[in-house]
Structure formats: C-alpha cells, structure tokens
Length: 116
Image (cartoon, rainbow, N blue to C red; front, side, top):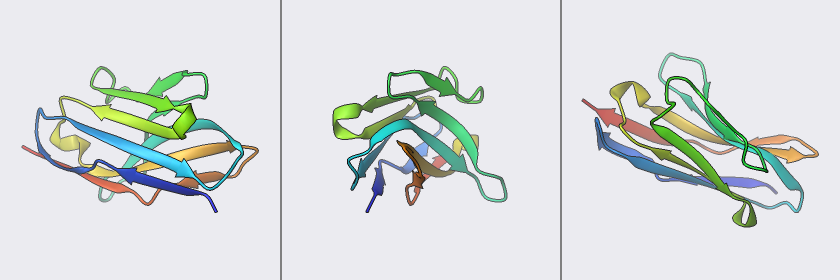
C-alpha cells in the first residue's frame, strides 16, 4: 500500500524558512512527477511546485524566487525549501506522487503557519 509521509511543517515568523519533506513508500513502480500543493482556509487547493523524474520543475509565480523543490529518486523523497516566508503562505501543504502507471497519491498534509 502506497504511503506518502510528510514532515517539516510548523510555525514560523515572516521572513523565516522551513523545509518540507515527503517520502513515498509501498510500491515498486516508478514515480513520474512529485509535487507540493497547498490549501488555505476557504480557498481551493493550488499548485506550489512540481518536479519530474529528470528534474524538470514547475514553480508557482507566487513562490518563485523564494521556494525551491528538489527530489532524491533513490529515496523516493521530495523536498520543498521555503525561504522568505510570508503570512499568505499559511496553508496546509500536501505532497503528491504521480506513479507510472498511475494512480496518483496524496499525503495527509502538513500545516505551515507564518506569523506576521
């Protein structure tokens, strides 16, 4: 059974940094894309960043220049380094893994709170 386990969320002051990790386990299938999404209260879930198996990245404009996504294919782990955090970055952050062949899997979410 596939599991995505996220860690690294928490409370930080504006301007601070956090690093999220997400480790996938439970399947021998290859993982195509891995990524991070977030959902703030009262808002829809939105893409933050994704990374392909060969390192191609897609970064949301709202976090470009502040957030960096990376992955360790040997560990089936994706990371999100978040710098210069702003109160509007406050949300539950979800990890997603796109397996080849599918389906897709989601983590349970980790709360990130940025105080002003």
